Amino acid sequence: MAEINWTAEAERWLWDIYDYIIQDKPDAAANVVSGIYAKAQLLTRFPRNRLSVSQRIRRRYSHLLYGHYRITYLIKSSKRIDILCVFHGSLDIDRFLL
Image (cartoon, rainbow, N blue to C red; front, side, top):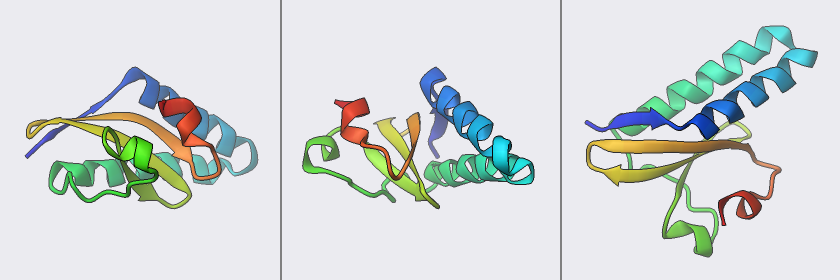
């Protein structure tokens, strides 16, 4: 089973998501962030269960979907997966990952 490592950047994305949602829906903010976290934890058992978004990115990064969010990760080894960031689906991820 692989260990999930949340990078500092990924944690900042989660806090940004939380801060954005809490402005309009305080009750939903913690639920969304905990849902994203729980979805990422599935990678410990199914690391190759992913969505490839573009040809340029496919070779390096993998994506897991949670609602409108894309959890971007890198399989470092059979024992370690790094969560790199969490994007809202409307963002141009090429701008951030290339």
